[in-house]
Length: 231
Image (cartoon, rainbow, N blue to C red):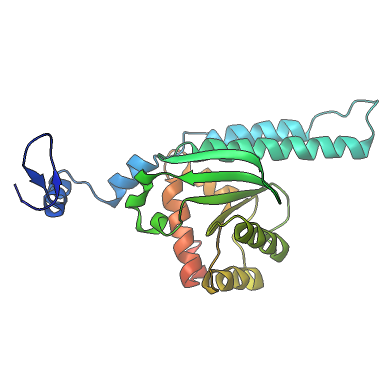
């Protein structure tokens, strides 16, 4: 056993980084295995079940004693809460993430605040994210726009967050909005806005890793490679 590295058990033996690499190679521990451990595929139909619930909310019949404007407001809030609960359920599939929703601060209410635990530091990308990141949830028929991006950037700056995950019904961002996102990622200090669509989440059901998805999207923003978003 190598003499440099971490002590193993209660003995004087040491377990070096090279020992770890050899162990990983011998046991076929590669990136795929690490991602599968940290963030296994989303359960089958997780996203679809929540979307079905949201559809039921949207199609609920308005009581006769409730005005149309008030009813639309209730429906919108109920759909937003359900969408946030879907995102919380997805975040719970990632080991070492802890999430809170509707977090009131001195200046804003954050849709979802995520603490990054030490176990995720094995990822070079996640190590750049710091202690936490913020999720904003947009369940509308609109595409990702400059207003959403600008507001999320302000929220990140106000709450000392380096990364924001914008989960929207549609995506990916295009044209000037994509350029805006890339520019924000290279300013000082940078704020990286990672955009995730419902189609992305549906594809992760039973097959894809949410952690791998967001780390790939992060890389795309940092290098400004919009063509990788659909790759």
